[in-house]
Amino acid sequence: MKILGITGGVGCGKSTVLHYLEEAYGAFLIECDQVAKDLQEPGEVCWQPMINLFGEQIVREDQSIDRSAVAKMVFQNADLREKLNAIVHPAVKERVHQLIEAHADCPLIVIEAALLMDDNYDLICDEIWYIHADEPVRRQRLKCSRGYTDERITQMIRSQRTEESFRALTTLTIDNSDENVQNTFWQLDRELAMRGIKKRN
Image 1 (cartoon, rainbow, N blue to C red):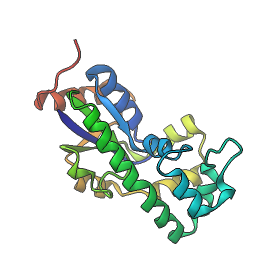
Image 2: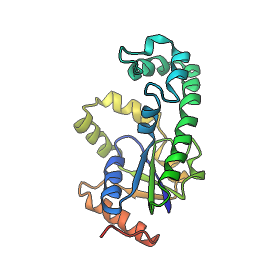
Image 3: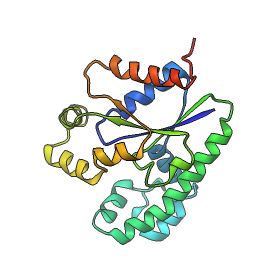
Image 4: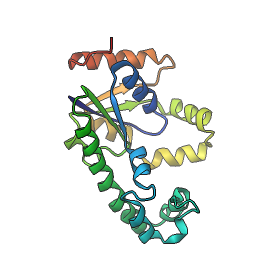
């Protein structure tokens, strides 16, 4: 079994890479943002601790947590943000371990998160690959796919690691700047073949 970490900044095209790895290689995907969302559902392990932290005001009528309200509360409050992270991040990592164990027969498991290096996922992953795209390309993608303004995109990019930091802390860089996505897939195929991981028949 190969455990591969995938990371990169907003708009770099991580979702495209994940979809390809799932379709072409049968990879089992673990998207940490989705895991975090799942763990905040009613009855899950983060649900009550988050209510204890933020109060009943974050609970909707259907008992789900209003994630946008939480985001507003932690945006300018570093102490609250740290406390939230202390609830969510360890729970996500524990669930990731459980998912890996449950899919131990899968030849390729892919873990995706922007914060893989911050949360020591290098201790879980065999390798962590950085998905790179040039900033103008990322900006154009975010405008077209999500309708973000230049100001919001700038704010998001500045809040994340620099390209130099990503490159320094990861095993390999996959360049996903080209409009022809087949060039990205070719890089993935080449690197996985070198590691003995075969495509589906």
